[in-house]
Image (cartoon, rainbow, N blue to C red; front, side, top):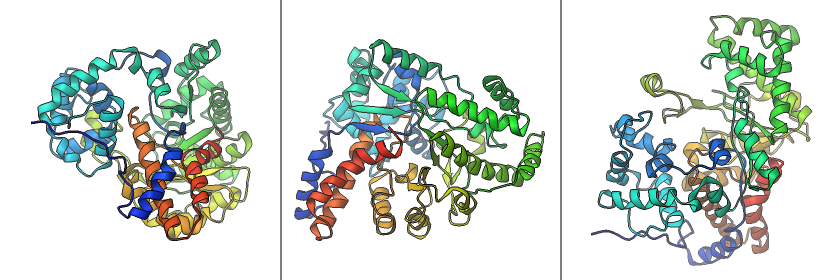
Length: 470
């Protein structure tokens, strides 16, 4: 016997009748605002080529590390799920997912997936072993239609702009195709890139030394000299900006920054471009380059995002067998007050600069991040991120940040996802949670409802658009 799949219209709102009624009114006004997706990891090839997604597993299982990391934690083979294994039968991989869907009860992945099943594909029975083939066939059949091609889905879900994330070594050919489609009138969707320099900033990133050769070739500069290396960054940043980029993104292990003299920086660069690099030198170079990148952002206007605090590829065996981004990144404790002081001492008072800070360390919310953003003109706070992109994570973020930083030192919401159809699902969750948070303030007479209505629109749309210069 199959069970019905329904999405309650009051989901995520308070059980208190007065607050729920306010939240409903606030949400109605923002539910259908366009989506600003200023940071994420969707594949620009989807929008350039506009080819159909192949099947249900390819669309919803394989790109989503939130999903397959849970399954892996229960001993399910990534090979069997089709992760890095092109020989796996996608229908069988999907059946494994269905048989174990109960593992996701109470998780944000369950909420996002149910939204996709119900809203995107119109399925009205629960996803489980008994309905696995029904789901697979219905989704896969839908994906073969023009209505489910990437550009059509982009338009259907009201995405105004989406930013992908590329390395300086990327030629951005897919973005060139998209821009040509915009110019010709073939498609109006706005897909832009973001400059993610980690492969040529982090000496511990795989093939760092070899990557500098490619960096030299693309920029026309000698990236093996410190002056040429900085010039190469300026050249590639300008190219990314010409292709629509409004931001950079820095995924460092820590938030450490340094402000070295030219002599110190040149000596350090000489050390990190040797065959053997010490961990201390690698950290110092990353720290120095965050400050350098802030200076470049002040010059060229690109918004700077810092995403620190992930112990990347914690599972060495998994990394060796399957590569990066396979669900084995783990949050670590992160210092911001001391770590950011060199950068902020140099650039923190520059109102023309925007630095957006993210964290995986919730203990830093009220103690460090809110006071820093509540003081320095250059700083803004990114939303609850990654492991905390969840109903309770968003509530903790708002509760601990708002008292000191306020709402307007934050940048609304971004989805930061590789799973395309989770974008509207995640934005819906964020809008509901923010409306619920604001409804409580209204019910407690800490804010007028008209103010909450303005704030709901700002948090859903305006703040991200403004902060990312979109």
